[in-house]
Length: 326
Ligand SMILES: Nc1ncnc2c1ncn2[C@@H]1O[C@H](COP(=O)(O)OP(=O)(O)OP(=O)(O)O)[C@@H](O)[C@H]1O
Image 1 (cartoon, rainbow, N blue to C red):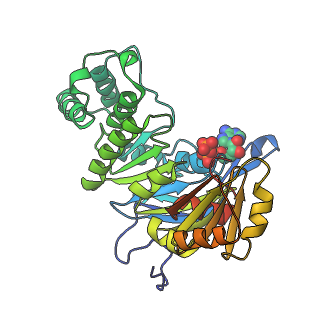
Image 2 (cartoon, protein in one colour):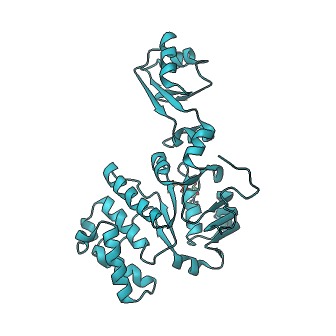
Image 3 (cartoon, rainbow, N blue to C red):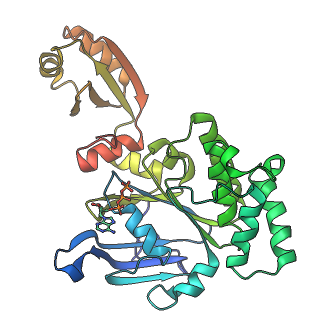
């Protein structure tokens, strides 16, 4: 990782960022005198064509940040430029040039797949022939051509998500915001959706996504920020963050009921860092197999032992002291 320039992190000299947030804040309920700060002053930039992730546990402030970028919820402090426009005053112009995929599918279940696209196109005031052309292209993009005339209520969860994404593309947006795009989907549906998102990246569309899934972030994101308690706690590429905060491998040991504490005590000193989770301990090491052999030599007998590559989940645990499923 090279972070030696004087530019703010994430800035490419000479290339205007798609999004620039400085001291961005969101406070709810301030008018009622009972304010709650969901986003506590964050700085970030998103570059053209990159897939930028916002990671964090429930309540970290991810959706609040997304809603401010989407210009559906005004910032209460700091500044936010989207596509070079001030989000405070240029909401309508920004909304015309971005696509939004909200956390819950908001497609109309009583209409057909194609009708959903046509109606959405009309919100943007696009000419009818243009909307029909785009809808046909997007049905193909979303792999929904053979479902075009079916009512949405007959679609699976994965198909509805793909329709929601297709709908967000009707205005040919330069930025697409995806709030937890694969939450609730089965693995096959997730992979099909990822494949569609890769296609958008290849097409040069800037993606901003929030997710709870570290594997999703590792797969899709060029760069990401981790949020905790309304603040950004780190920023970087998935690989760069893993390298910065973790060892190469993690040895996961599970023990029988009541054994964990004693076994953890025996393991102390084997590696520099041990994390205790309710159901297992994690030993951060560059050589998982060698550490396991050393553990055995100390009389540590786990029910199961697994050596894996360090992941973003480990970065999150390092930074926040919690797992994302806490
Ligand atoms: N309209 C609102 N009024 C008051 N508090 C809110 C409102 N929206 C969100 N919050 C609070 O702000 C905090 C951040 O919420 P936000 O939805 O941005 O988090 P998140 O990281 O997206 O979480 P999740 O993964 O659950 O969506 C939470 O404590 C939430 O309860």
